[in-house]
Length: 345
Image (cartoon, rainbow, N blue to C red; front, side):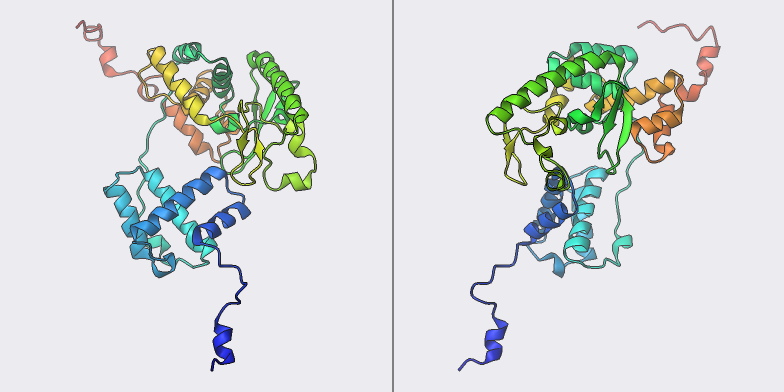
């Protein structure tokens, strides 16, 4: 005969099963308003960590297992220090935020050091050639916007209509790196092209509303706080997709912002067409924006504000790539007229 204690040890027959670990991680990430990209990256690293240790539960593992995983990434896969750092951040989130475990051994985990590297910067002539070589009209506007404002590629693609102030010639960058807002300039030469783009988007949005669509993703439950905001034109992305996509979180079918990979491909293709052999990416335009401002005499504190850097020391890296030669001094070779003549091959 079964005792009451036996029944007490069993969950009720109709009890909902406990959520899986990755579902718990996903729920916690969304509760803390992490971006969808961070969510995907963290879930991927946590899954790899568990599979690496033959599907052992993280509660059974600790410092040794974390170090073994990070070492394998560095040695077997030869990943960059930043990649290893992201994997560690994902694992720490799992233990601290989901499993609610203190990590007294955290400071003892060996982390890869990020090498100090100077950013790739284009000359003004190279920048002009790159922009001229972009063959997609929409990509031309985005590339010009990246160089003219110093925005990161996702900051530009996530730009909403309400954050473009044509009268003041300003752009408000929302939730940039570090979840900070900032204000950057709107170049005079982009006022009319961007205004024309917004008009096209307005017509597109009106057509979406006419067929019962027209919603857009709003962060931090703003759709609940501001009823109707998700269909308001001001909240729409300036650079929206041509077709409707399903939001991975809510399941709502709506327009999203353009994929950053499309911009990356356009920039790479344009660099090749322009005969630029440097390693060029959309972020190179941000580096070039900062360097060219400093070359023209702009105050470094102003450049810091425009870029959204927390510390001016981050902005100082651009002083090392100014077009003044090594540290702004003349090579002794150039001081010897007999030796300074160009060498003919």
